[in-house]
Structures are given as C-alpha cells and as structure tokens.
Length: 256
Image (cartoon, rainbow, N blue to C red; front, side):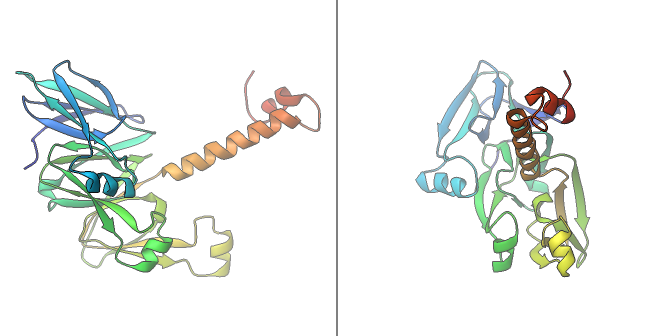
C-alpha cells in the first residue's frame, strides 16, 4: 500500500511541488529532482528493488537509481521537487483511476512510497515504430499519488467509448490503459512533405482520460538548438562581412 501524502504545487510556468510527510512516510523521486527538504528527512538512494528494476527504469528513460525521502522525525516534514523545464506538474491519484496509468518516457517526477514504475510496451508494431515515443512507455502502478511533468499548457480530455482524437505524437503525455493507442498515417503527398506536423499522428480511442501538452520538450530543444546555431553563425561571419557579431546580433533581434 502506498503512503498517503499531502502536497502543494507552486508556480505557474516553472513549477515545483512540495510534499508534506507524516512520521515514517516517504516519497520517491528521480535522482537530482530535489530542491529542498526538512532537516529530519533521510535520503535513501538505491535501485528501488534490485538490478532488474533499475534497468527497467533506464529503459523507460529514467535514471538507474531512485531516491526515497523518508521522514524519520516525530513531526511533519517537507520535501520539494522542481520541474526540469517550463510546463505543468500533473497529479495522478492512482487509487481513483484504476491503479495504473501510462505515461511518456521521462514524464515521471515523484510519487508516494509504494508506487512502482514499470515498462509499458506499445501494443502495435506501427505505434512503436512511428509513434515518436518508440516502443517503450512508462506504467505507474499503485494506490497512491504520483506526479508527472509535461511542457507548456496541459489539456485533459475525457474520451467517451469509441470517441477518437488524433494527436501529434509528441504532444501526448499520459493516458488511461483503457484508451486504445495507435498510429495513423497522414494521407496526401503535400501533407506529408509540406505539412510541418509530421507524417504520423497518434490515434487515441476511448473510453478513458488522456493528457496533452502544448510544448513537447523536443520542440523546445529544437528551437533552442536552431537559435544557437544561427547566433553562432552570425557572430562568426557577421552580416555581408560587415560588423561581425554586433551587426549580426542586432539584425537577429538582440538588444545592445
């Protein structure tokens, strides 16, 4: 049985979550996610159940080790975890949604002690080959609170039976096991070549809940990488050979 923990989420675009622990309660989190903690909290870093579980987490995109934060004092204690990039933290009460939920790789942030992170394989070959997230997803299992993180604004959609929503594969964050997950080819030569949205979409069919993100980390990373390359090129070559990095930066939108 998972520990029953209280929590509070702070911030808007760069959120953090503070967990309140009673004596002997604990929370598990990815290595490096902790921001601050009370003096009477004890850290225990391990594979979380043997080498096999450590390797399973590595396959799902998490680290080999996981850290448990235990309240060893006699009163309440607090520990906080920060989101890795701009976005929102999504609380999932697994006891109210069937005891399991499926998430994209790297989505897990922290969870009450007792929640397990397992491998979820996509059911279809096409979904794994063209689904953006590959064959491997995360499955969170337990009867307590788990917290996942996603980029930008988060949308929750509750699909009725046989209701279908087509989603950009990178925008899919998490979904209930009852939702059917498949990949659909975007028809038409011009759509595939010039559409700019990718040639495959995730086809989600209800019933069940899905969570979507407006800013997948891959999009953010691509924009940062493209801007960095442009800036570096401008600083080296200048604009028409004149002015070097100063003129190139001004025309590129930098202020002085």
